[in-house]
Amino acid sequence: MNQIVFGWEEWVALPDLGLVAIKAKVDTGAKTSSLHAFAIESYGREGNRRVRFGVHPIPERPDIELFCSAPLIDQRTVVSSNGESELRYVIATSIKVGGETWPIEVSLTNRESMQYRMLVGREALTGKIIVNPNESCVQGELSDSLYEEFPLPRTQRNLKIAILSREPDNYSTRRLAEAAEARNHMVEVINTTQCYMNITSRSPEVHIDGRKLIGFDAVIPRIGASVTFYGMAVVRQFEMMGVYCLNSSHAIGCSRDKLFAHQLLARSGIGMPITGFARSPKATDELIKSVKGAPLVLKLLEGTQGRGVVLAETKKAAESVLGAFQGLRANILVQEFIKEAGGADIRCLVLGNRVIAAMKRQADAGEFRSNLHRGGKATRIRISKEERETAVKAAKALGLSLAGVDMLRADDGPKVLEVNSSPGLEGIEKVTGLDIADKIAEHLEKNARARTTRKARRK
Image 1: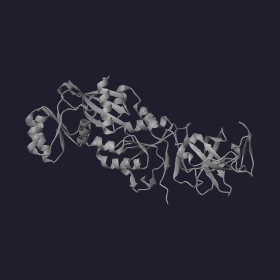
Image 2: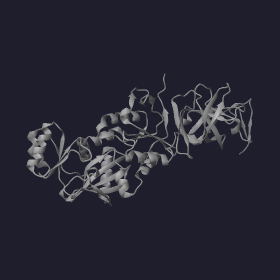
Image 3: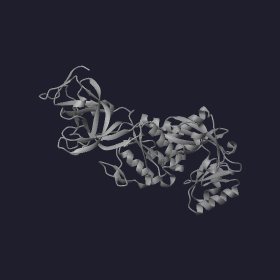
Image 4: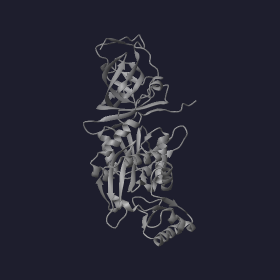
């Protein structure tokens, strides 16, 4: 390092934390450097502990808010200049001043009421640094406009990820949490239905158990069908807060409304079994004819995992089932039966713009539903280019970044049955041997921007 002259205050950068400009007070009377931080949380496994925290780097700009993470190296009791002692987290990071960069240790404390967001102590002042107490900003001026001019890149730093799930011990939820934690991300599993929201135009918030959920970079929605409406509202609120959601609230809603989903797929020219929908009993005969007659499949719009799906092998049976459902005022789709599929379907898992895994599900003898929850048997399968393109196109039609696309192999090409916005991972991971949860965590790293929020400035 070349010799550097510091004044009693200097503009510095902490590049490892994404902090491009902080005006710091240089204090040779203080041993340890300190940085303003709020919402401080430690996480990670033993031997790889980290700290995550928020920073308002510019005192005059509370609208600039960043969340950072760094290796945790210690917890120390620090005595401030007014004689008060405080147990603080100490992190390792780097400091950049005047074109030179070197490692330092920094303690984290709330300096919201202080003039300077950072204090540079004597441990950070190497033998090459000379402090001139009569000078100010010897190493030049920086500006808070740097946060506008050079927005943080898609982060390789550690993320804070929320998994919205009512079942923390569910296989998929556990695997997603384990995979993200293995990549040094901070993960919190949040019960969707226990969240409550403060809905305002200036500062939307999500709360749970009396605390505000802040600092999240990404949300993985695992929204059960029975709580779709409320789950979509929670996801939408995170979206309003500027948090990246793996599947948007709108896309989840499109996939859960089976009728609307089929309409969107049809509009995109995606192959499906011929599908009809009617409310009036007078239309029953024409509805059955429209799907090439019996045998045919009837599906409740609200059904999941094969529930509410009936195979009517004769026209009489179809008329009877339709009449019963219409009497209950249930909404039901009537669908062509693809006999050549032989009770088997294909589950393609789409992530981003590609199929990352596929399996074939075969129904038990005497059963036409191949769902694993119904006793279906799964095997790994190689899919065709057409099937791959169809799966990606189906997920895209509904706006889903992560989707389980179920399709049948028909004589005239693949036919999409359903697109699932919360696909289970257990069956497909075990059958394919792929670490799909890790691929999802990697996808979040590429798509969740570093948490840089510029809140509306109050006049």
